[in-house]
Length: 129
Image (cartoon, rainbow, N blue to C red; front, side, top):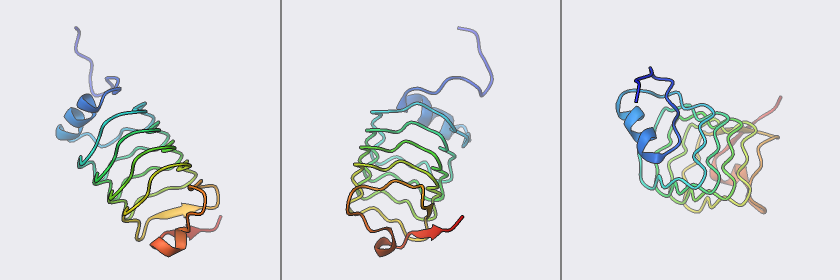
């Protein structure tokens, strides 16, 4: 297999964790739907426009990540640390946010949350356009 630079395709949890360990933080647009990322530390990463639908992110450290325009529908985010994340226009429909830390995370009116979820009650900051 020929070696390509840091633009190698990231489509498995193992590859993602290897790139993170190498110091890479730009994972914009990755397709990791259904990935098992339980308990991983990915703080400070850019996951804008990423597909993380149905991913298991239970207990993951996503502090300070950019999740703008990311698809997190049906993702397991129980007990995940999402403090300071950017959730602009993210799709969190049917995501499990039980116990997730969301203080000082930013979202907008285009962010989609699970039914009956109250962003302000968990410390989310809704930015007006």
